[in-house]
Length: 340
Image 1 (cartoon, rainbow, N blue to C red):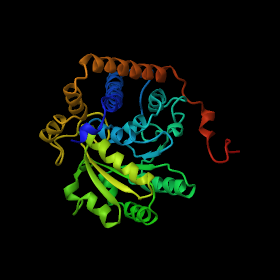
Image 2 (cartoon, rainbow, N blue to C red; image 1 turned 135 degrees about the vertical axis):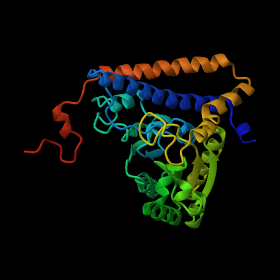
Image 3 (cartoon, rainbow, N blue to C red; image 1 turned 90 degrees about the horizontal axis):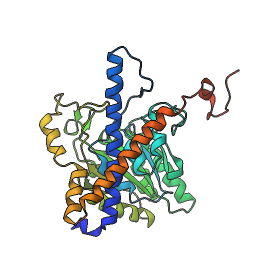
Image 4 (tube, one colour; image 1 turned 90 degrees about the vertical axis):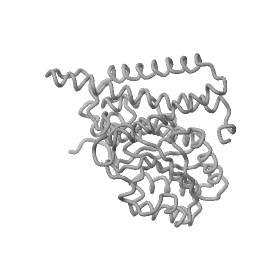
């Protein structure tokens, strides 16, 4: 079976990474609840997250399963739903929280917010809020690596809605033609906002890739080992010069497209469907597997305590951090300096 190909250490590493994503985003949910309660009482919170936020709760296996197979110098480019990719790629937790709070210590100096996380030191080249925007950027990074004779792999994360963009087909066709070392990772959560994939696409996502000459594989986002298996094969193909791979990871977001509440009861998103996917929680599925392997519950409990402490430390760091100054508006620009 697939899971037998991975050691306890590999699965524990994935467990911690998924737990970090889950707990960090759950903390964001609590932060919104706290500050919204203040606003309702007419109280201005001392510190607040004011940017829109798109959560990956329920989809953690996709980001972690792919990023765990990458090296530090491999690069990833994400979407508006980028927290999981940023953290799974090794992005700094403190800098992420500070960015959400709009502070100068944020990974984008407080100028990008939730949808524009970046940490080039670990290969997180950035995130694009344009649907499908990550795809050509990753192709460009892969082309650069190929031209320089490097073994670096580039990854584009995107949702099922992005395959309906023209740039998806153009990018995959070019990547196949040049046999580029790029992974196209489609997190298929079945909904573009509230529109179900069956109402939008006449054929499956892997078939589209195959028609463009790109190898494809489908992985179960509820099973970390399945995603690891798919990613490992795709990365090996890329490094060997065998070209791109599309990985369709079937997962499910528990929260609304944007915001901190579920959007069940609207269009086809039902509470019953959400409950079925919650029963397949990627963290719970992995914990059952680890327990069956004899990993002590105390080990997992200690990991949870450590992750919770790291998340609270990041929130406190963000709250203590200064806001950007008005002058900061004109830094990190092409031709820096305030206009005359």
